[in-house]
Image 1: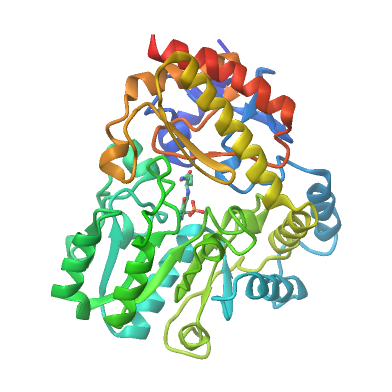
Image 2: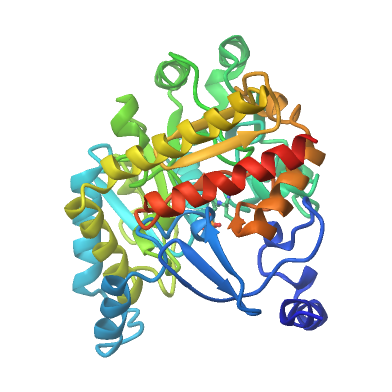
Length: 427
Ligand code: KE4
């Protein structure tokens, strides 16, 4: 019996499902999760000594690769000064100024401790600012485990076939309208009828919790236009895309100015972090100045701020976004070559260092398309790749992440393994 199996048996005695976050449980792919001992660069080592090239990257934060010396050193140095203060400190001012400088739509920003806190706070702000209650989200988009947003959610909720969580009061869920993504007619019709009720539309800047699919040309612009016309706010959830697909997130690429933005992951460098920001006239409604309450014991803690700031600086110094695009393009070209060799043009969606290989040959533009993928083929692909030394997300409803530590060697090795795994999956 492997040490991972022993640990999983022990974990299940004291942790629900044996995991601290459902998607880690391998329920969608079958089998048992492995337990990690350590990680460095593009490689993770499990407790049984197996080495794996990692395309999950702790779900986005490890954009430089795991445990780069520069981040480990800054943890050591900062920890000597304190682990948490619950008192204003210089690091949080510098983080706020960096975010405001890099993301022009963010005039003011508040730190918190997870992406969920960030999106939850955006909703409360939007409701407080507009005096309205209705929230609009999209099928398959995931914004963390916020009650109002666990309605037709993606990621782990979708993976486990429960996009609508138990425990969310029906009265609250009734205030959330869920629309099909990339469907202009649907959102136009909804706003024509009910736009005056809407506090905010929240959308993943790039939906990456049902695999990954891209906004059709003009779609985000339409959402921006409709929200502006009807006095609703536009919230970009950039928890995953922020500081990854571009220095200023996807809004830098698409040129759309949201009213609020939720952020996380990359800005913590692997330590617990979230942030939300936007128009000053909205953010100033937050306590202690305004009537919208939001708080957090560990918000702006020095370790997360110091590590996150260092990661952002390293990304900028290394021209990280250009390099991530180049590596992502290399990986995509390799996957497409494999599919051409096999004569099976599987759908591969990518933006920069985020991607999804669907076991589906038709285009994937929304959740319904994503669900047409061959789940059994994905399972065979996932486990063969894992057996051969590559770790992809244990669900077809997640994205893959490439880091600056994924060099040509790792990419070429990964593609060789993917060739075998795809052939195995397709039989
Ligand atoms: P956290 O609360 O997990 O820090 O962030 C929630 C969140 C918000 N918005 C987006 C677009 C997200 O993708 C997430 C969380 N991402 C998932 C991966 N798809 C986290 C993995 C997990 O739940 O274990």
